[in-house]
Image (cartoon, rainbow, N blue to C red):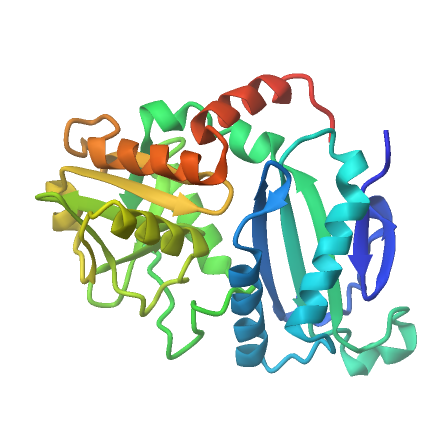
Length: 312
């Protein structure tokens, strides 16, 4: 089997050799921006949208990586091509990480220097979506956590960055409430914002509602879901949503790059709607699957079986 390669500042090196210094800003400050894209049929999905958000994040963080967005896209495509023989026909994540580089205070002992570092890696989605396979049928349980979203005036969540310890704290709090529960954050006013790396939607009276794009990461999969709904003639509104609205919803779901969309069938220990995946969710998932040429839930079930014997 071929070895996976990582793009590392213009070079391609074995995945197991890709390392940065302990004195890099990414480790010292969480000073890194990133993107994760996925493939369908081994073709990157909405890659340009992910790269546009990556460059917006770099602009926000004032990191100049030395590559234009076209350069980055070309490097990404080359990384994909070089890795296809090692992927055994599996779909994969594409992870872009851009760090500011090593702290100048330690320049004498940082092998790779203090300039920004760009890495691009690919990793099969076997565990990412295989582990979530059952949730396409059973759904997820979301709970409101004491940990709230960080207001945009402190750090803008629209810039996808690695300074996200509040996400981890929220996940730990949710797990304390119930094993397997997922965190749903609120803003300072108590309105719903986002999950820890995902966006949420509800359906009320045939309309799709989702939180306003203020204190959230504006997910590419969120946009894809909204595009599909518009194409199907289902009204979509960005609005303030409270926990009350989630409890009163007819159905709900969450979106994220790897899984696309999974239903929310329980909220704060109570069923959402009928407690099963709703008709609007099912219609959108079917449309998404048709759009990308992959049975999204079916692929997850397939990867769940592969995961039982798969070695990364």
